[in-house]
Image 1 (cartoon, rainbow, N blue to C red):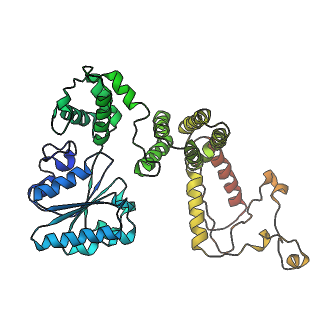
Image 2: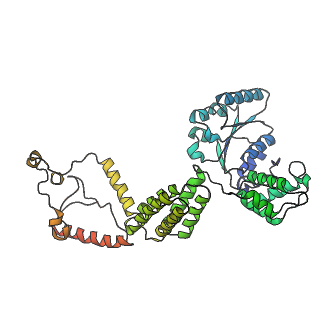
Length: 425
């Protein structure tokens, strides 16, 4: 069922529609190296074949899953022979992200001298998976998951095509059956056609394609989810940002999507702990406690009880007052620690467990805070000598931090009256 013309190609209007750059390049026979990035079943291989066919170029396809150096050399040798005959070669590399750096670099000389027009296909973000040298010589085109309308069109075409499809079976199809197949395909045309073929094979003579039969075929999960790939990180990012944005409903949705895709709930539990510290912080310290307890429940009880506890923590954090004050303060302190060198601990803050240390002034003039008014030694200095006073921690006017801010303001006023006399940043 691979389309043989651009007009028959389903979806990807943003790059193949009338007047779009890739469409114009193909129609003008302006072949160039490219990387096609998109989810499975969106037409990457088909598009590469179409480009080669419409330009009259020789087409060589290899898969990075199975190919090695020997296969690459053989492809280049074949491209050289074809070039000597006056034809161009499109070398299509499927799953190109699976090649290591050296293998990817191996294509560069032949792209530059025109031996091949390189087309790579990947489901992973090229920014992370492909060498910058290769990316600089190839244009990246992003393919999108097909809509349910697109998928339904693919299914209807297969049902009516007696040569390439299953039109010779003369199967009628209930509208609901096609809707179920289109939804179960989850944007993947290849999956849709496989499901259609299985449903057709299971249908009895004269029965047609029924919704009941399709439900049997699609049972067991439909979602696109790669537990180590781009979709995985996109979804955990969406979950984190939903919590940060105080949207418990969206946060629950993304959590459910990850579970539905097969994500380990313990991974989400660990990330929820991070959210509690980074985005709620001292505005509501109970959030961190609840996140840790949810993690503990998941480890003790497993699913589904643990998942419910994680969901509870997610909702609480999303609804809690937000503060990233500690997160920012810690980052600033780390930068100072890195940039200011190994500043000595002031003598009055050093421990003095031996007589020699005491004679050297270790701990001398240290003021024990609990012996001071309100357990606060006004004017005492805790930063290294010569380092300007810092205020990394700036509480936000929300939740518990509003009260913390008031307390710190009062203590700093006492420092001022005590004449600390230090420059502050």
